[in-house]
Length: 206
Image (cartoon, rainbow, N blue to C red; front, top):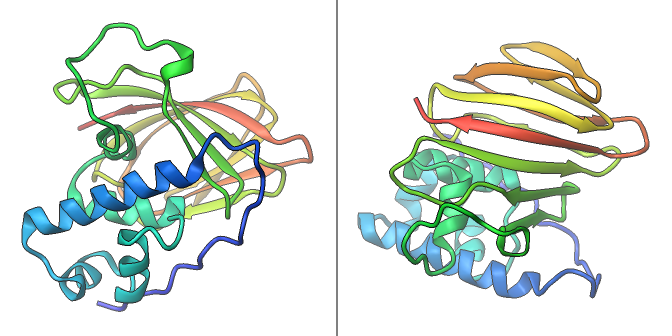
């Protein structure tokens, strides 16, 4: 399988970000744990994910902040959604029915201009979850595969205009519009216009 060098994000000196380095460090440790649990070498993971060994090594050592595209590939290999992976980054207690706004996990792909908030209270035994996504003007994120084949998604745009491509068809979504799809192949999310876009993503495991 051909492996790809996924570009590292540029340096970000925005002090307003709530300690992104700490989040990246915990994420790096979890990625290393998942590989070790399976007894895979970096070369084996590179073959399975299509990501180069050097990129994987830097991600596991916390030397680079992983992009959404890279995490999506690893989620596919490890058989979990991105919300579950990010939820595993912090020590989880017993599931709770209410997750306060201040406690919802936020992850940022600074290279792509994408901010992801896990809205639903985490629960490993349940199949549905809600995510809030924010794309900066001009943001363009392409996923070459779903994290879980056959994943059901509902994309409800709250603000701005979003273009979502699936099955080679692009859907332009304005505020209030909702797209429902089941994901088997590549998808692409693009922010149209100059005001950014905010949307709710409902995800249901098959």
